[in-house]
Amino acid sequence: HNGNLINAPQLRRELLERGVGLTTSTDSEVIIHLLAGAGGNDWLTRIRILMAKAEGAYTLVILTRDAIYGVRDPWGLRPLVLGRVDGGYAVASESCAFATIGGEMIREIAPGEVVRIDRDGFEILQGAPPQKIAFCTFEQIYFARPDSILNGKLVHQVRQKLGQRLAKEAPAKADIVVPVPDSGTPHAIGYAQRSKIPYSEGLIKSRYIGRTFIQPSDHLRKVGVAMKFNPLPDNLDGKRVVLVDDSIVRGNTSGPLVEMLRNAGAKEVHVRVACPAIKFPCFMGVDMATQAELIAANMTVEEICEHIGADSLAFLSVDGLMKALKSEDGYCNACFTGNYPFQTPIPLFELQEKEKFAGVWAE
Image (cartoon, rainbow, N blue to C red; front, side, top):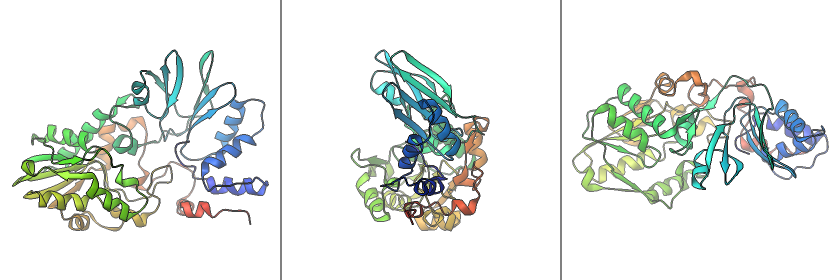
């Protein structure tokens, strides 16, 4: 299961009232029990009953005795792709998974679709009517691997376009463009292409350290920055640097990186961010659950700039993001705009913290 159900607490209460025993605080367990108690004579019927109740982001892989089912939510918030591997078929979150094992992508599973894979092949079925498409922009900006295909486009090329748009909206007088590797690299390439400022590596990333953004605490994130990056002083000394990153969520990475570049000899550091300022929490599977932890929700751009110690700071606009992504494809921008793609009202959203969900036990 990839994603989060925004109505998981309500569904959890319903299960508890029916006497279902729950042993974890995850919405994945809720999904399992909803499927098990759905009724119906076949798995497709059970899946359709689940999809009629579940609200939020989910892609599912369900292994049964006779088949494998892949399920994508009606809003298409999270990706799901079908591929061919060694004469058989498989599903994955990203197309790059198939290339890694010598397979090939067949197609993306559309919002609301169910794919059934068995010994005879695969079948595409409709699990629920598609809603207004709300594919997560953060997949294109950060989460997906650059060599994956999402919405029919190579992610690396999409990120270059974001960087090009950023250079148009937020130019800077500088000597080099430096990415925050690896996630900021395609954006920085695009920025350099559009601005005509030379692209240069200024930071080396340790391949053994994971994503600092998804570390469970601020302390671990900050320690992770120091362990994750090391500067290249010969490329930075005396230079005016445009530092391009894919996003700023909590602001724990940007400040130490700016300081690192200055200590390595950079004369100026201008931070450019290839997505809009993140001001609202996500309840659909991205690790930013409260506004209190989002730096852009609590500071102005000028205040963030001062906080991270940069000479200037600029974010890509929402309009620029949509033009680069081609907004007719349908995207969720809730973390930038506060406009969520569901019927659930905002006051209820604010109660959907993981602690609140974990606290829904039998009375």
